Length: 194
Image (cartoon, rainbow, N blue to C red):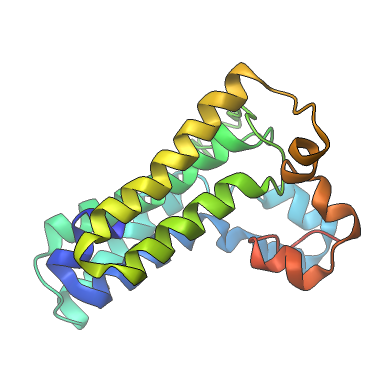
């Protein structure tokens, strides 16, 4: 998302802040230090609820605009808010785990669950988009758009075809994890699977 304007307006610092804003909801994974019970109780609440959604991007924008002098505060805050909201929308659309967006005011959770945990297609699509951005900086926005378009196309396809039927389809949709090493799972963003 940073390639759609934040990088151009705020430079590498803006991109770094966009990445941090996108990671903010998963800071609640630190609850795993307290054990699986604590993690199950608090994950997708603390980082995905209203306090983080409202205050996280605000704090990062204040840091970027006034401590690091990256540029004007209001557009930076909007970019960072969009980065965090992109994470929340993907969590809701991707997985069947309810996200409590309005916590602590409400315990209602939302989940669509279009793909399974460790589905490689969105990861590979986004990695390809990043690769295009890095390989052709002059076309960074187009490369980022291609990566995101790949994810959205796959989500639409999975909506129409919820269960893969072929061996490769099952493997790509998460079956690859059964015999994979933890390091390989970490490369796809899976930091918590046992």
